[in-house]
Length: 243
Image (cartoon, rainbow, N blue to C red; front, side, top):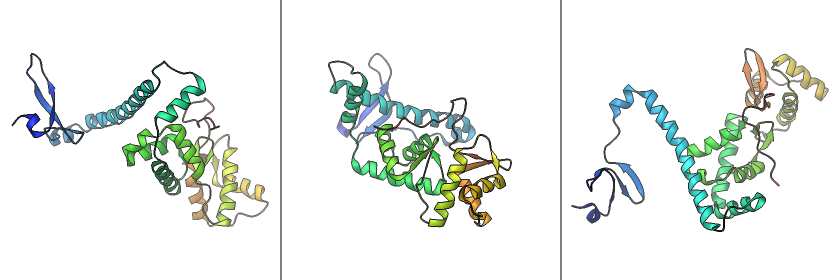
């Protein structure tokens, strides 16, 4: 039976009218005719990882290209400049409020379970959940984050933990870590917190360590704030403020 009679289109390679169909499209979804070579994947895991990463990046690039073409069709008279270009993109790449609300809930959950995360880490978390989030512009995602999180340095944090005493110590710890110029020992951090609050820090050790792990990384016994902005200017820097 011919492809047309089946209602399926073939993706062909070849020349002089001769085609070898390697993939089929059904209900707008493409798939290879042959299943993955499990033996090859098992023998060459590095190759599999390489192309998995390539496809992930390529997929994001394709989505951006589609949006750019859509913008070009919506603005046939030519490219705009400055704020006009941003307004055109915002208008042409509309994302449903429900998707943005879901993004907010997922980001909030990730920050509570994983601690401080960079914008890029949150973006990757969303994209790994659902490809629909690829259509959410960075500016829109930042606006969503501002409703569910706070930005400190290069990371986003859950605003509060919900316990008045814990939030008091956590807010103080954030202020101490923000001023870091180099990694500090736990004892040095506790001393600064005690001086800032003018009181003894009476948190259990495991609770204090939990707060530290949320906000900092341990480097051979010294704690370094996750949101510290590299002096060289490299790294995942925060996006400019939204106006």
